Length: 142
Image 1 (tube, rainbow, N blue to C red):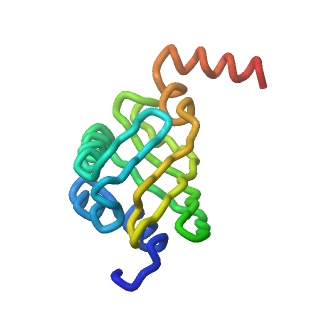
Image 2: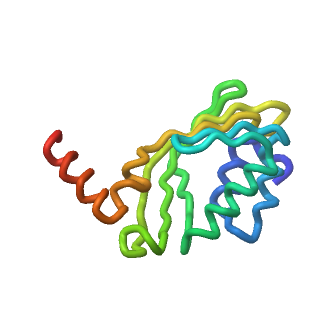
């Protein structure tokens, strides 16, 4: 894994990431990583590990399938589908959400990671009552 391009290393780690191997994050992220998604902003590798530990402790499973990646200079763009099951969402069934990430590298590690995805698809549509309202609104506006 040491001779891999940074993007390839990122993809490999994310495809095997789980609650028991969060130490792998240090192999791809700088200590002062800035991680941003539509619901969180996290600064530092310690906080990022804590975020992932919390994520994995609340779901039955979580897997990332990477469908494509591009890089230009110190920037990379990763396209993925996250499959997860949460006991309190969608009756515990697997939920799939497409998204993409922009990664900025410095000295072979990621200094900034920004995720883009639809929060409604990830969470809101799967909450009892609220999900029904959102689906109704989607139906009327679509």
